[in-house]
Image 1 (spheres, one colour):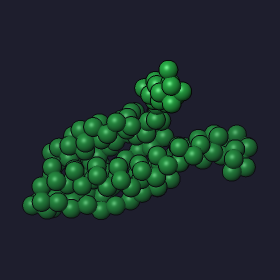
Image 2: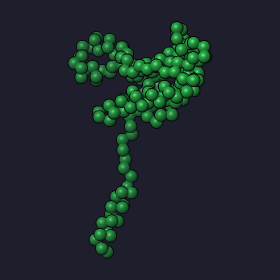
Image 3: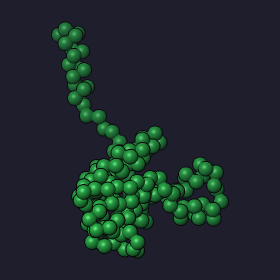
Image 4: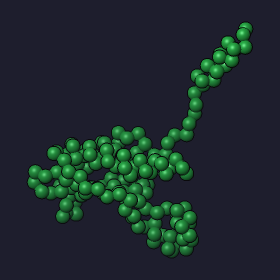
Amino acid sequence: MNIHVLTAVVVLIAAATPAYAQPAERIRVTLEARSEGRPDSDATATRLLGDVRRGLEAISDVELGSRDDSRRVMWIVAGTTPGVYAASVIVTERYDRETLMVLGIEDDDMAHRMMALQIVIDHQIFTGRDLAELAKRIVTAVDAGVFARLRTLTKKL
C-alpha cells in the first residue's frame, strides 16, 4: 500500500474520532419581577415574568435557580401606565468568598457583610408594542450583553 494512501487513511480516522470537550459552565440566575410603585406583581408584570422566564430557559447555558443557589439576580420592574409596555431590568451579582480573597478581604466578618450585598452589573430600560415583544427584547439584550460578558469571563478562568 502506498504511504500516501496510508497517511490519508490515518488522518481520516483521527478526524472521525469525537473530541470530548468540557461542558460550558452554566450561568445561574434568579428571576424576579414586580410592578412599578408596588411591592408585588400585577397581571402585566406576572405575564412579562413568564415570557422572560420561557425565553431564558431556551438559552442552553442559562439556568434559573433560587436565591440560595444563584449568585446573580435579574430584577424586572414592569411599568404600570395603561397601554405602554416598558420595563427596567437590573442584573446584580453577589460576591463569593474566593473573589473577596483575591481582593484582599480576609476578615470573616467583613467578607460575610460583603457577600450579603448585591452589586449592579447591568441596568437597561426596555419598551415594546406588546408584552411578548418586550420580553423578547429583554432576553435578547441580556443574552447578548451581560451573559455574553460572563461567558468570556468563565472561559478565561
